[in-house]
Amino acid sequence: MYSLKERYDVIIVGTGVAGLNCALNLPRDKRVLVLCKSKITDCDSYLAQGGICRLRNEGDYDSYYEDTMRAGHYENNPAAVESMIKGSQEVIADLVSLGVEFAREEDGSFAYTKEGGHSFPRICYHEDSTGKEITTTLLSAVRKLDNVELAERVTMLDLIADGNECFGIVVLDNASGEVHKIFGDYTVLATGGLGGAFGNTTNFGILKGDALAVCIDRGVAVDRINYIQVHPTSLYSKKRGRRFLISESVRGEGAYLLDKNFNRFTDELKPRDVVKDAVFAQMKKDGTKHVWLDMRHIPAEKIASHFPAIVQRCKEEGYDVFTECIPVVPAIHYFMGGIRSDLKGRTTMSRLYAVGETCCNGVHGKNRLASNSLLESLLFAKRAAQDITSVYSPAESEGESAAVASLDMDKYKNPKKLLAKYRTQVRKAVKAASEGKDININYKEN
Image (cartoon, rainbow, N blue to C red; front, top):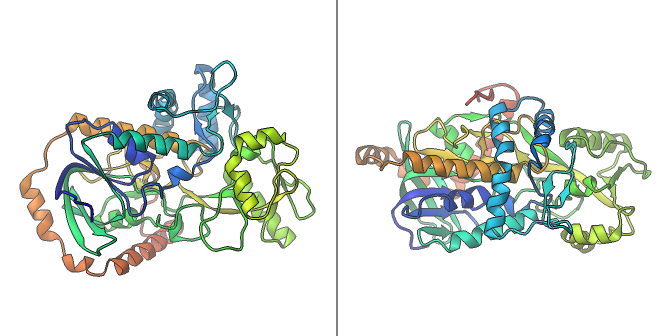
């Protein structure tokens, strides 16, 4: 295991854009640990292709707001949507200042692309690997900080808590199999989605919703955990493993969805859930395992410059996107529900925050608008760091001692079995929420 200390000021679980941006915005005099259960880049932030939304100007606000609300079936938290949109220019400015390179027009202004559900192009992008560009830039900045430690292959097994107050986490060293207690005045959960708990997903397989299960066990409120977005277009393959996403930007640039007879059957730029339903309906009608995506009519130079990673991956699977259609099928993609948090990242447990895809602040409603995920994660992670800074106080030793005394260390003797239990618990909880049972899925305004 890394030579981790037993105590830090702030513990952040997750190395996606939410976890990294939270670390970047904490005071430099605070000792911060950022950990993840696999490699640092094994996070969905790294996989994001399409881009990140930015309010173009004040005249774009009403349209952007309505697009987000309409995509979310008007179940969004209006305050969260307003905060996200109004903070979008700040987020992009922060990223540019760190060195993120977005596509530009000849005059130096941002180049914008359009995706499903958007009335206008308002998405900043870096080829078809925007998430990789942002994540690697943030990671480089974090690595320069003397006050932050990064630890790979360390899995969170539980919270250390007394009543409704968090004092740190219990972790597994994946290499040695040893279990350790790590204490922190504040803990931030930035653990991503849960697609790995279900399979047929664009998510990394390690993302199984462990933190969600831990919070349910610990009585931390969760919301809307059956709100799981299925992306309309992943590359169809008979191979096992994670599904490769075909970015919505491809359709934003004009690609068509075709049935088995190579006829268009839907409006490709409707919100994701609408397109997904249309794809499933067409597959059922045609008796096929996929539909076709056609980008042959898009100028070749645009495809090559905007979607190089997609071109290459399709080539590896035996498809030439310039001369033939590619098979696509819906796959589990994004988690709109999660650990209940307010607009500062606070959960219902004291000293515990949740940011990014693992949390639910209501910004996405029932269905996320394309390219709002990176924006939401970055903005509210920064807000959480700012809140921790403003309210910071050391945890009381009495509470910490009581929390340690309440731990049943036998629970962690078989971590593999415990993690399997968490996966089963997540699946059951999602099913129960879908049926309106056991889990509170009704969003409560922050």
